[in-house]
View 1 (cartoon, one colour):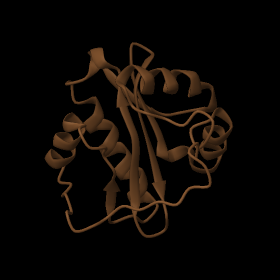
View 2: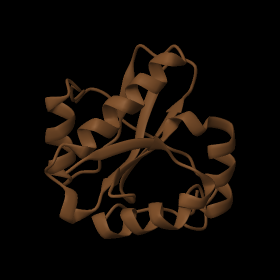
View 3: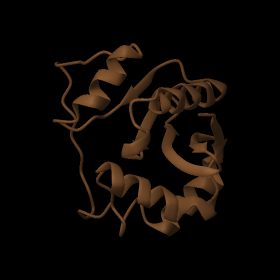
Length: 144
């Protein structure tokens, strides 16, 4: 099986959503994960939107973000029938490389409680759990 990585395009939005849904990754279709928001983000930071293809079919995605201090690895998802083949690892490593090109030297990811496969993958890639850090958010709405 040959896996090809490439930058995602606006036209990939429907496939991205299908991958998120199939892999059980929650998303905000009326907020930050809406078509309009994703298209805007791809325009601004297309190098941080990476997809994995098998036989020209999009099977995995990752979105990176760079806040000027830390690189964030977000929205990692692989179709269930392609999980366990190293695709998520390839996506994370490619995203780290894109973030390094922007100057990132610290990489972070948030993994929801109960997502053991993602947690184990992150640990294998050298990510460390910080039990002394609390993640707090303030949101204008539940959709953002």
